[in-house]
Length: 249
Ligand code: CAA
Image 1 (cartoon, rainbow, N blue to C red):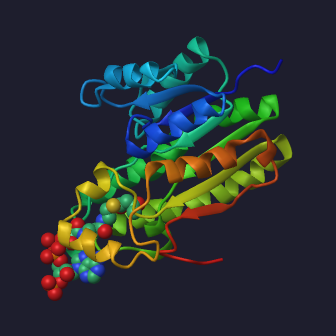
Image 2 (image 1 turned 180 degrees about the vertical axis):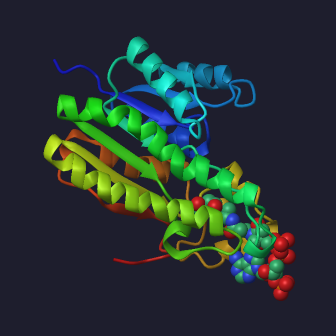
């Protein structure tokens, strides 16, 4: 019998992250999430909530923007759980503001967490994936990395950068059975979109052909598809999940 694959989800306790953890568990994966602040994220309650639904999930503390912390986190993961087969980079923040009003700190923070975080974490696990001849990396980007968005030069730049990272990694990993893909969510009901000004959110939702925001489960379904063992030939792709808000090929 094949051993259960190990999935590491960064920011797994967030809205989209939780749906991904639940979906991957339903797919038969073992689940470990990273968490930057166990208390603020109420991580033990998160573990309990999953456990009460029959899902065994664990967590490791890690600030994805800190490379040294990621090295230590990877050692802990290897020691406690084994080699990571599936990595889903979800951890991300927004710090919205027009560029002419944006502080350098706001720019740097978003780049450090959303883009450098993907490097810092993936850097730890890709050698192990190559060695075992199997790996799945999925980076959660955004429609706003494809189309740009008012007030998000930092976020749009980071999310667009993830696509370049993913395509390059796909070429490196393909000969070794390692795939790398992005999923680009549109507007999804989470605390991130809750924090938008009501007027702006309503204006955006009115432009979504599907008529409403997406659900975290919509994103999880795409991740499930891309992380399947059978998805070995889907590599370097971007899968938009945006209710037809932005269509491209
Ligand atoms: N489209 C068109 N016009 C817009 C706009 C938009 N998306 N956003 C702002 N504007 C316009 C406003 O209507 C306003 O116009 P008027 O001066 O003519 O009234 C002008 O720009 C200034 O807007 P604000 O008064 O809101 O200016 P502000 O400096 O207080 O805030 C802002 C600007 C930070 C961009 C704010 O509007 C905002 O937070 N917008 C939301 C940005 C956004 O979409 N974030 C997405 C978060 S969710 C996410 O990122 C998840 C994901 O991956 C999809």
